[in-house]
Image (tube, rainbow, N blue to C red; front, side, top):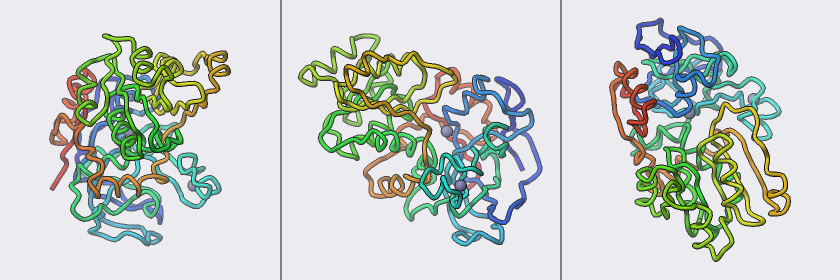
Length: 348
Ligand SMILES: [Zn+2]
Ligand SMILES: [Zn+2]
Protein backbone atom coordinates (compact mmCIF):
# COMPACT_ATOMS: atom_id res chain seq x y z
CA UNK A 1 0.00 0.00 0.00
CA UNK A 2 0.94 3.66 -0.25
CA UNK A 3 1.61 5.56 2.99
CA UNK A 4 3.14 8.81 4.22
CA UNK A 5 6.48 7.89 5.73
CA UNK A 6 8.39 10.03 8.20
CA UNK A 7 12.07 10.16 7.23
CA UNK A 8 13.47 13.08 9.16
CA UNK A 9 12.57 16.53 10.40
CA UNK A 10 10.95 18.32 7.45
CA UNK A 11 11.07 15.17 5.32
CA UNK A 12 7.98 13.05 4.74
CA UNK A 13 7.52 10.96 1.60
CA UNK A 14 4.81 8.82 0.05
CA UNK A 15 6.16 5.31 -0.33
CA UNK A 16 4.97 1.78 -0.90
CA UNK A 17 5.07 -0.32 2.26
CA UNK A 18 3.58 -3.61 3.47
CA UNK A 19 -0.15 -3.67 4.19
CA UNK A 20 -0.96 -3.81 7.90
CA UNK A 21 -2.28 -7.08 9.33
CA UNK A 22 -4.34 -8.00 12.38
CA UNK A 23 -1.85 -8.34 15.26
CA UNK A 24 -4.18 -8.50 18.28
CA UNK A 25 -7.66 -10.04 18.51
CA UNK A 26 -9.25 -6.62 19.21
CA UNK A 27 -7.71 -5.01 16.09
CA UNK A 28 -9.46 -3.91 12.94
CA UNK A 29 -7.92 -3.09 9.60
CA UNK A 30 -9.53 0.00 8.09
CA UNK A 31 -9.26 0.95 4.43
CA UNK A 32 -8.75 4.70 4.72
CA UNK A 33 -10.87 6.85 2.43
CA UNK A 34 -10.05 10.30 3.83
CA UNK A 35 -7.27 11.46 6.16
CA UNK A 36 -5.99 14.85 7.23
CA UNK A 37 -2.84 16.57 8.40
CA UNK A 38 -3.20 17.73 12.00
CA UNK A 39 -1.51 20.69 13.65
CA UNK A 40 0.02 18.16 16.03
CA UNK A 41 1.61 16.34 13.06
CA UNK A 42 3.53 19.56 12.48
CA UNK A 43 5.24 19.11 15.86
CA UNK A 44 6.64 15.83 14.53
CA UNK A 45 7.44 17.40 11.16
CA UNK A 46 9.31 20.26 12.86
CA UNK A 47 10.94 17.94 15.38
CA UNK A 48 9.59 19.88 18.37
CA UNK A 49 8.08 16.61 19.62
CA UNK A 50 10.67 13.87 19.13
CA UNK A 51 10.19 10.13 18.90
CA UNK A 52 9.10 9.49 15.31
CA UNK A 53 11.36 6.77 13.93
CA UNK A 54 12.47 7.05 10.30
CA UNK A 55 10.30 4.69 8.28
CA UNK A 56 7.20 5.02 10.48
CA UNK A 57 3.79 5.95 9.08
CA UNK A 58 2.51 9.33 10.28
CA UNK A 59 -1.07 10.58 10.73
CA UNK A 60 -4.00 10.13 13.09
CA UNK A 61 -7.09 11.73 11.53
CA UNK A 62 -9.03 9.25 9.43
CA UNK A 63 -12.31 7.99 8.03
CA UNK A 64 -12.59 4.71 6.20
CA UNK A 65 -14.27 1.38 5.68
CA UNK A 66 -13.63 -1.67 7.83
CA UNK A 67 -11.70 -4.21 5.80
CA UNK A 68 -11.16 -6.94 8.37
CA UNK A 69 -11.72 -7.45 12.10
CA UNK A 70 -9.97 -9.58 14.71
CA UNK A 71 -11.90 -12.34 16.53
CA UNK A 72 -12.67 -10.19 19.61
CA UNK A 73 -14.22 -7.30 17.68
CA UNK A 74 -17.99 -7.32 18.21
CA UNK A 75 -19.30 -3.93 17.14
CA UNK A 76 -17.93 -3.75 13.62
CA UNK A 77 -17.79 -5.90 10.53
CA UNK A 78 -16.27 -5.68 7.10
CA UNK A 79 -17.87 -2.90 5.07
CA UNK A 80 -18.83 -0.62 7.98
CA UNK A 81 -18.01 3.03 7.39
CA UNK A 82 -16.10 4.35 10.40
CA UNK A 83 -14.37 7.33 11.94
CA UNK A 84 -11.83 6.74 14.67
CA UNK A 85 -10.26 8.50 17.61
CA UNK A 86 -6.66 9.67 17.21
CA UNK A 87 -5.75 7.95 20.47
CA UNK A 88 -6.60 4.35 21.26
CA UNK A 89 -7.91 3.04 24.57
CA UNK A 90 -8.57 -0.49 25.75
CA UNK A 91 -11.91 0.40 27.34
CA UNK A 92 -11.34 -2.07 30.15
CA UNK A 93 -8.53 -0.86 32.43
CA UNK A 94 -9.26 1.13 35.57
CA UNK A 95 -8.60 4.54 34.00
CA UNK A 96 -10.80 3.69 31.01
CA UNK A 97 -13.58 2.53 33.37
CA UNK A 98 -13.34 5.90 35.11
CA UNK A 99 -13.85 7.57 31.71
CA UNK A 100 -10.26 8.80 31.45
CA UNK A 101 -9.67 7.12 28.12
CA UNK A 102 -6.77 9.46 27.38
CA UNK A 103 -4.98 7.91 30.36
CA UNK A 104 -5.51 4.27 29.30
CA UNK A 105 -2.72 2.09 30.66
CA UNK A 106 -2.54 0.32 27.31
CA UNK A 107 -3.31 3.34 25.13
CA UNK A 108 -1.34 5.28 22.55
CA UNK A 109 -1.62 7.77 19.71
CA UNK A 110 -1.72 6.55 16.12
CA UNK A 111 1.31 7.62 14.09
CA UNK A 112 2.93 9.60 16.90
CA UNK A 113 6.18 7.85 17.66
CA UNK A 114 7.72 5.61 20.29
CA UNK A 115 6.63 7.66 23.32
CA UNK A 116 2.99 7.22 22.29
CA UNK A 117 2.79 3.48 21.78
CA UNK A 118 4.81 3.19 18.58
CA UNK A 119 1.65 2.70 16.50
CA UNK A 120 1.60 3.15 12.75
CA UNK A 121 -0.40 6.11 11.48
CA UNK A 122 -3.38 6.63 9.21
CA UNK A 123 -2.06 8.73 6.32
CA UNK A 124 -2.07 5.52 4.34
CA UNK A 125 -4.32 3.31 2.25
CA UNK A 126 -4.87 0.95 5.19
CA UNK A 127 -4.37 1.23 8.95
CA UNK A 128 -4.41 -1.18 11.88
CA UNK A 129 -6.70 0.19 14.59
CA UNK A 130 -6.20 -1.35 18.06
CA UNK A 131 -9.20 -1.89 20.40
CA UNK A 132 -11.52 -1.29 17.45
CA UNK A 133 -14.71 -1.65 19.52
CA UNK A 134 -13.67 1.36 21.60
CA UNK A 135 -11.60 3.40 19.14
CA UNK A 136 -14.01 3.43 16.19
CA UNK A 137 -17.49 4.86 15.66
CA UNK A 138 -19.87 4.19 12.79
CA UNK A 139 -20.27 7.25 10.54
CA UNK A 140 -23.93 8.32 10.84
CA UNK A 141 -25.98 8.11 7.65
CA UNK A 142 -25.83 11.19 5.50
CA UNK A 143 -22.48 12.48 6.75
CA UNK A 144 -19.63 12.93 4.30
CA UNK A 145 -16.10 11.79 5.15
CA UNK A 146 -15.06 15.38 5.81
CA UNK A 147 -18.00 16.05 8.11
CA UNK A 148 -17.22 12.98 10.21
CA UNK A 149 -13.43 13.19 10.09
CA UNK A 150 -12.86 15.91 12.68
CA UNK A 151 -14.90 14.20 15.39
CA UNK A 152 -11.96 11.81 15.75
CA UNK A 153 -9.64 14.62 16.74
CA UNK A 154 -9.79 18.40 16.50
CA UNK A 155 -13.55 19.00 16.82
CA UNK A 156 -13.80 16.71 19.83
CA UNK A 157 -10.59 18.20 21.25
CA UNK A 158 -12.13 21.66 21.05
CA UNK A 159 -15.53 20.51 22.32
CA UNK A 160 -13.89 18.67 25.22
CA UNK A 161 -11.96 21.78 26.20
CA UNK A 162 -15.24 23.72 26.41
CA UNK A 163 -16.84 20.89 28.43
CA UNK A 164 -13.82 20.91 30.76
CA UNK A 165 -14.32 24.64 31.35
CA UNK A 166 -17.74 23.96 32.88
CA UNK A 167 -19.33 26.53 30.53
CA UNK A 168 -22.89 27.40 31.51
CA UNK A 169 -25.49 28.74 29.07
CA UNK A 170 -25.34 32.52 28.90
CA UNK A 171 -21.67 32.81 29.80
CA UNK A 172 -19.19 34.49 27.52
CA UNK A 173 -16.10 32.78 26.17
CA UNK A 174 -12.75 34.05 24.92
CA UNK A 175 -11.09 31.62 22.52
CA UNK A 176 -7.36 32.25 22.13
CA UNK A 177 -6.13 31.09 18.74
CA UNK A 178 -8.24 30.88 15.58
CA UNK A 179 -6.57 27.90 13.95
CA UNK A 180 -8.74 24.85 13.24
CA UNK A 181 -9.05 23.88 16.94
CA UNK A 182 -9.87 27.45 17.94
CA UNK A 183 -12.53 27.73 15.24
CA UNK A 184 -14.10 24.51 16.50
CA UNK A 185 -13.93 25.84 20.07
CA UNK A 186 -15.96 28.84 18.85
CA UNK A 187 -18.52 26.47 17.30
CA UNK A 188 -18.57 24.26 20.39
CA UNK A 189 -18.99 27.21 22.77
CA UNK A 190 -22.05 28.38 20.82
CA UNK A 191 -23.44 24.84 20.70
CA UNK A 192 -23.09 24.65 24.50
CA UNK A 193 -24.93 27.93 25.05
CA UNK A 194 -22.32 30.71 25.11
CA UNK A 195 -23.88 34.16 24.88
CA UNK A 196 -20.87 35.73 23.23
CA UNK A 197 -17.60 34.35 21.95
CA UNK A 198 -14.49 36.51 21.54
CA UNK A 199 -12.11 35.13 18.94
CA UNK A 200 -8.57 36.23 19.75
CA UNK A 201 -5.69 35.83 17.32
CA UNK A 202 -2.65 37.91 16.42
CA UNK A 203 -3.49 37.57 12.73
CA UNK A 204 -6.59 39.51 11.71
CA UNK A 205 -7.42 37.23 8.77
CA UNK A 206 -7.63 34.26 11.12
CA UNK A 207 -10.30 35.97 13.21
CA UNK A 208 -12.48 36.54 10.13
CA UNK A 209 -13.71 32.94 9.86
CA UNK A 210 -14.61 33.06 13.56
CA UNK A 211 -16.53 36.28 12.90
CA UNK A 212 -18.47 34.56 10.11
CA UNK A 213 -19.48 31.95 12.69
CA UNK A 214 -20.86 34.63 15.00
CA UNK A 215 -17.85 35.40 17.18
CA UNK A 216 -16.56 38.90 17.97
CA UNK A 217 -13.15 39.18 16.28
CA UNK A 218 -10.32 40.39 18.52
CA UNK A 219 -7.18 40.72 16.36
CA UNK A 220 -4.70 41.15 19.17
CA UNK A 221 -1.89 42.68 17.13
CA UNK A 222 -4.14 45.61 16.33
CA UNK A 223 -5.91 46.06 19.66
CA UNK A 224 -5.48 45.39 23.36
CA UNK A 225 -7.42 42.13 23.73
CA UNK A 226 -7.89 42.50 27.47
CA UNK A 227 -9.25 46.04 27.17
CA UNK A 228 -11.52 45.05 24.29
CA UNK A 229 -13.02 42.11 26.16
CA UNK A 230 -13.49 44.19 29.32
CA UNK A 231 -15.30 46.76 27.20
CA UNK A 232 -17.73 44.08 26.03
CA UNK A 233 -18.21 42.54 29.49
CA UNK A 234 -18.94 45.56 31.62
CA UNK A 235 -15.37 45.65 32.88
CA UNK A 236 -15.30 42.05 34.11
CA UNK A 237 -13.38 39.94 31.59
CA UNK A 238 -14.27 36.57 30.11
CA UNK A 239 -16.23 34.00 32.13
CA UNK A 240 -14.35 31.26 30.33
CA UNK A 241 -11.10 31.25 28.36
CA UNK A 242 -10.28 28.45 25.93
CA UNK A 243 -6.58 28.38 25.05
CA UNK A 244 -6.15 26.66 21.68
CA UNK A 245 -2.58 27.53 20.68
CA UNK A 246 -0.22 25.93 23.21
CA UNK A 247 2.69 27.51 25.06
CA UNK A 248 3.36 30.04 27.75
CA UNK A 249 2.59 33.27 25.88
CA UNK A 250 -1.04 32.38 25.16
CA UNK A 251 -1.51 30.75 28.58
CA UNK A 252 -0.34 33.99 30.21
CA UNK A 253 -2.79 35.92 28.02
CA UNK A 254 -5.55 33.64 29.30
CA UNK A 255 -4.90 34.79 32.86
CA UNK A 256 -5.25 38.40 31.68
CA UNK A 257 -8.50 37.84 29.82
CA UNK A 258 -10.35 35.77 32.43
CA UNK A 259 -12.62 37.51 34.93
CA UNK A 260 -12.28 37.10 38.66
CA UNK A 261 -13.73 33.70 39.56
CA UNK A 262 -13.56 32.57 35.93
CA UNK A 263 -12.13 29.43 34.34
CA UNK A 264 -9.34 28.75 31.87
CA UNK A 265 -9.38 25.51 29.89
CA UNK A 266 -6.23 24.97 27.86
CA UNK A 267 -5.85 22.40 25.14
CA UNK A 268 -3.14 23.75 22.84
CA UNK A 269 -0.21 21.43 22.26
CA UNK A 270 3.21 22.66 23.29
CA UNK A 271 6.66 21.19 23.58
CA UNK A 272 7.51 23.63 26.38
CA UNK A 273 8.21 21.90 29.68
CA UNK A 274 7.41 24.66 32.10
CA UNK A 275 5.23 27.71 32.46
CA UNK A 276 5.72 30.55 34.95
CA UNK A 277 2.36 30.19 36.67
CA UNK A 278 0.97 33.62 37.62
CA UNK A 279 0.51 32.69 41.27
CA UNK A 280 -0.55 36.05 42.63
CA UNK A 281 -2.94 36.89 39.79
CA UNK A 282 -4.48 33.43 39.98
CA UNK A 283 -4.80 33.59 43.76
CA UNK A 284 -6.32 37.05 43.84
CA UNK A 285 -8.61 36.42 40.87
CA UNK A 286 -9.62 32.96 42.16
CA UNK A 287 -9.04 31.40 38.76
CA UNK A 288 -9.69 27.76 37.91
CA UNK A 289 -7.05 26.50 35.48
CA UNK A 290 -7.49 23.26 33.56
CA UNK A 291 -4.98 21.82 31.09
CA UNK A 292 -5.19 18.43 29.46
CA UNK A 293 -5.10 16.53 26.21
CA UNK A 294 -8.30 15.47 24.50
CA UNK A 295 -10.40 12.57 25.75
CA UNK A 296 -12.00 11.67 22.43
CA UNK A 297 -13.86 8.53 23.55
CA UNK A 298 -15.69 10.56 26.20
CA UNK A 299 -17.12 13.13 23.78
CA UNK A 300 -17.10 11.73 20.23
CA UNK A 301 -20.70 10.47 20.29
CA UNK A 302 -21.83 13.97 21.26
CA UNK A 303 -19.82 15.71 18.55
CA UNK A 304 -21.01 13.23 15.91
CA UNK A 305 -24.59 14.01 16.94
CA UNK A 306 -23.96 17.78 16.80
CA UNK A 307 -22.52 17.45 13.29
CA UNK A 308 -25.29 15.13 12.14
CA UNK A 309 -27.90 17.53 13.54
CA UNK A 310 -26.38 20.44 11.65
CA UNK A 311 -25.38 22.33 14.81
CA UNK A 312 -21.69 22.30 13.92
CA UNK A 313 -20.14 22.26 10.45
CA UNK A 314 -16.48 21.37 10.98
CA UNK A 315 -15.67 21.48 7.25
CA UNK A 316 -15.42 25.29 7.37
CA UNK A 317 -11.74 24.95 8.34
CA UNK A 318 -10.72 22.99 5.24
CA UNK A 319 -8.50 25.01 2.93
CA UNK A 320 -6.84 22.32 0.79
CA UNK A 321 -7.82 18.93 -0.56
CA UNK A 322 -4.97 16.86 -1.97
CA UNK A 323 -4.57 13.27 -3.08
CA UNK A 324 -2.50 11.12 -0.70
CA UNK A 325 0.41 11.22 -3.16
CA UNK A 326 0.66 15.00 -2.63
CA UNK A 327 0.96 14.73 1.17
CA UNK A 328 4.51 16.16 1.27
CA UNK A 329 3.16 19.24 -0.52
CA UNK A 330 0.38 19.41 2.07
CA UNK A 331 2.91 19.33 4.92
CA UNK A 332 4.92 22.08 3.28
CA UNK A 333 1.87 24.34 2.77
CA UNK A 334 0.71 23.72 6.33
CA UNK A 335 4.19 24.30 7.79
CA UNK A 336 4.51 27.56 5.84
CA UNK A 337 1.06 28.61 7.11
CA UNK A 338 -0.29 28.76 3.57
CA UNK A 339 -2.91 26.17 4.48
CA UNK A 340 -5.43 26.22 7.32
CA UNK A 341 -6.37 22.52 7.16
CA UNK A 342 -5.27 19.96 4.60
CA UNK A 343 -7.45 16.99 3.70
CA UNK A 344 -5.80 13.97 2.09
CA UNK A 345 -8.11 12.13 -0.28
CA UNK A 346 -6.98 8.52 -0.15
CA UNK A 347 -9.61 6.49 -2.00
CA UNK A 348 -13.29 6.45 -2.94
ZN1 LIG B 1 -4.28 15.70 16.01
ZN1 LIG C 1 -7.69 1.30 29.10
